[in-house]
Image (tube, rainbow, N blue to C red; front, top):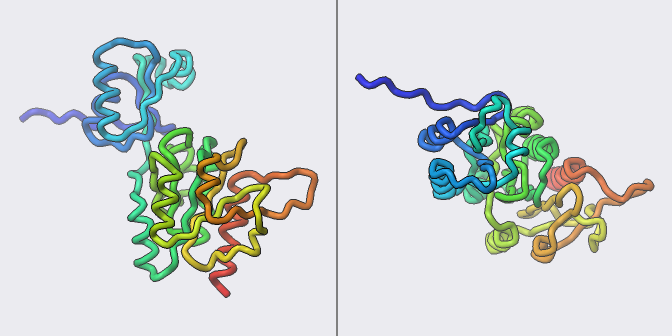
Length: 255
């Protein structure tokens, strides 16, 4: 009887390194968030890895070999490192169905390019605690469901669906077609968050750490709301802003 090869397991930080290990992880269906390939490599094996990953919808990032050297824990990455996801991504339909099953108007958090995994983990934790039905992130220029995100979320990634989409403006239009109102957070918002009606179907968009919402995302929102700032600073951490918006929604829905 032929002995079965063990499925490659990610290390504690979620990294799978080396050509054979990454190839086997793809073959075994291991949830993978991103694959990092050395830029300029012409090796056929790396080409096969990139093609197989793209066929599965996995983001492939070409980067300088020095970045791979910095990321590597084994110091033998062979030009490729996969970043494993701690769980499978949900679909947007899964999130909407979760609201239907509870008989509640959808409450969804949309993260516009949060690149800091600690911020994303904190947002997921708050969303779960507030009873949100799901979190949506973009495929690119965003942290994914990595081990760091899972740890920062205090286990919330196991209890709330997280979907990943290729195009946030298109996703927001789909949500609007489903009857969901889209509320973007912005310092120049046209209304205070306390004047926003969050009792009905709502998607709350949280902008990136540095630039806030992208232009196309902001233009797609139904409303742009602002958090009153009484101090000398004019912005909050993304996860803190998410918490304020979510718990205003909780307060309104409890009334």
